[in-house]
Image (tube, rainbow over all chains, first blue to last red):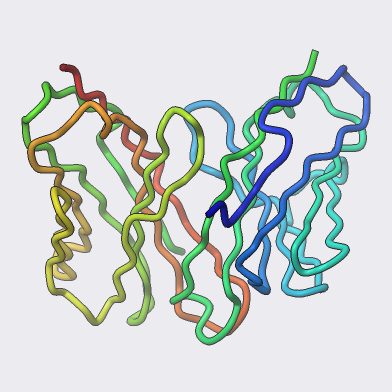
Length: 116
Length: 117
């Protein structure tokens, strides 16, 4: 029944060591989003894909990159993680058809990243 | 600019009490959408409800109910007879009805609900 899947659920990396988080979906949605959520804060949008079109938020650091090889999968790459990048990373999808505002985003369970 | 305010940072109740989570929003648009999401300790954001700006009918789903009042720009969420499993952080969010494809959600800061036995 899982619709948006994230792996791994917990990831530990070392300062400066590249890390990749993955997200997959069974909803066949056009749009996939990556959010960063720090403790006691709301999720913060990093970027999204509409189909193959990548859209970065203006304040997303260059250290964060994303790839979407096909409709089902999307990856978040952190090139050189710093201590400040420790957070929960949430993937979400929405259908992308019709009026965007009326869409509903469905979230995965998240990956909790620890940077040592 | 759009803004969502959840003034209650944390609420503690005892099981079976009713509790209301407040959400106040700001937008210049006449057409917009409001959402509530639940985030239990496991971390996943669970969609609860979507409401468009033209539908001011209150909605009830089991123990959950929502009161949308455009006159006060509020979209409050009530849990009746709360249970321990309701313990979570609840986020209210707003999106504009512009364009197609990408949806930009503006989240409130969330309200942490603690329900004790």
